Image (cartoon, rainbow, N blue to C red; front, top):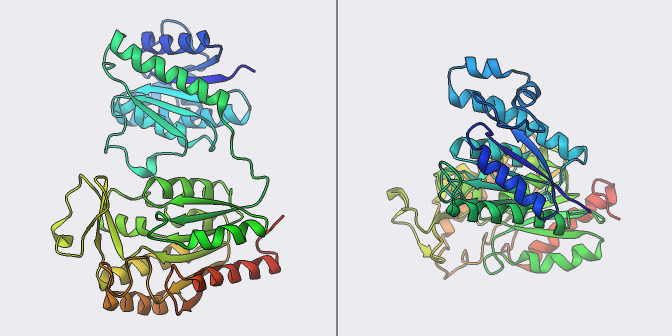
Length: 409
């Protein structure tokens, strides 16, 4: 079965490169829908979706975009229209994947278009700033793939053909091979941080499967939290066990290891039942290449590997983080139950271990008692990795199943 790829770009300035991508996809047996997001110029040949179609989708016009007198404002109009059309084309079954070419302007637009597609739809961005720290976690989407557009700033050449041909083949191959997620069983979305730092998933996975659920565990190191939130936003989960929240602490202190400002909000906005715990909220994760700010340089420190290193939050910072968690949960449209393991919130938060700070942990526990009510909550006399914690989580879930709040098979 032929797969059709949406090819997006500014056909006035990158006509030759975009045509090369379209031809490569067709040569491999794929179909193409072309979308022009130019503002000033015109393509050498008409595209399937014109720049006028794009601005109309955004409730505007090319002339209005030109009249802004600002390239950024004009391209944001194009981005709104392109994203809306991308989602519509997929919903109508007209495309099976997406590829966008661009510099910073085109990449900005590409990220919006990628967000418009559900998980399981391949999306490829060929960009002069691929993998750059210019791109924040909250702008990324599940399934997004990127390749550096080497030698692609101006004109088609043998160097950039290497990138473009790989990208064209990759997006078409992905569209042919992908097995999109199908929720044939209700799915529990769970967050964790590795399996040595947080171990509850080893205790919970089998019992949850025995109850008829599929369990999807997300690694809360920025990108994992982003993917978790994207699926929660789509209403993919029957319930969530959001037990690893270091990304919120990272966001609070300015670490790049975060998943965006909407962390811990999307399940609640969709009314998805949430069991929440403050796993790893004692630690701050920094990128291995990122200098630890002076304010945290004298804290307990752990170099996990060359990509990530951790410092620690003090008692007042933990209190602030608990207040932030409470604020994010208070507007949830579905039930919330907060579990506070008073014996520690990650493996190294135990007596004698490097991250154990009993005074800061006591501050966290005290703030939970102040900030979390009136949300349902349980103070648990155990460590987060103890069997008692997993049993408490299952007890909450079983109660919701009995009440019909969480639907099983």
